[in-house]
Image 1 (spheres, one colour):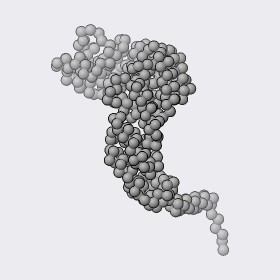
Image 2 (tube, helix red, strand yellow; image 1 turned 180 degrees about the horizontal axis):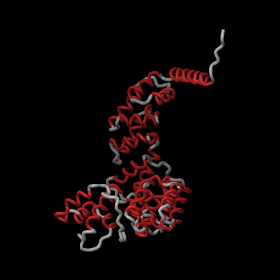
Image 3 (cartoon, rainbow, N blue to C red; image 1 turned 45 degrees about the vertical axis):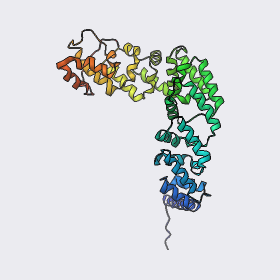
Image 4 (cartoon, helix red, strand yellow; image 1 turned 90 degrees about the vertical axis):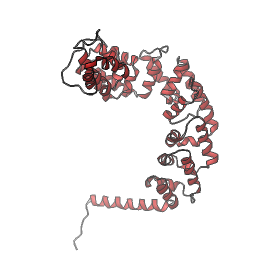
Length: 380
């Protein structure tokens, strides 16, 4: 009889298939069939995750407690998707005592103004909040609320928690960071603004927070300037590697490091834009319409505006009104960019009577009508 030699590839495939079979068989045998069915059928949790949960809580044999928890969340305004996500992240909440563990926390958040879908979004992403004792939560909440100026309706607090997706429980760490920020000159409304815009910064490790402040100061920000808060917020979102990449992008357009830092001090928001959007803006201002580099460095806020929805449409209007001498005095394109939508339409479109239709059509075009470049001999 002739012996058939199987190839290494076929042997590996057979081994993998056999391993997969026994793994699947083991998972099915070890899982809690009742709980697995409940998780997949009632909560629509993917089977792979449901298997892990059912194995972990193999002692659960009754639907009473899970169903009580699910119904409570549903009555509190949570969607099915939010309940599914919360249980997937922190399955033990499904087996918690509603009256002792879950209800007190939910009522606490509701009392603060977090209701329905707002609360559901937060709990679904950080369900571990329901396992933290109120003795730790309440003091930290009181500290945060004292920072928020004139927040009588808890609107800013809701904004903070919604953005943070968490509430700190380390009271000493929270107080230490607040005291450090105050020593840096961030007090009153400025501290309130920072908390609303970048709440996570308040829970950074002390060494990390000090490093961020040092970076901002090294770039020439003054602790006496209101821009210091916005500079700190901006660098807190970026790694040093990302910051350096954006610097190199600006340098590739002839902007020096010193000029880049100057632009950042004037408009910290430029670093919030993606590298792709920044490149689009630099390309448009410095190449397409040949703005002077000094003009852009002087007013970098232009780079924070939408190129497609604001800059290009207004440039089309500018191309019409300036050559025709429709304005009584010379106007810079930059000043047009910074006007509100209502004021822009009043001053540069609707006031021109017979030309208004043409201007409005140009404004709504949302793209440059030709490849012709105009040298704007203006200062933004």
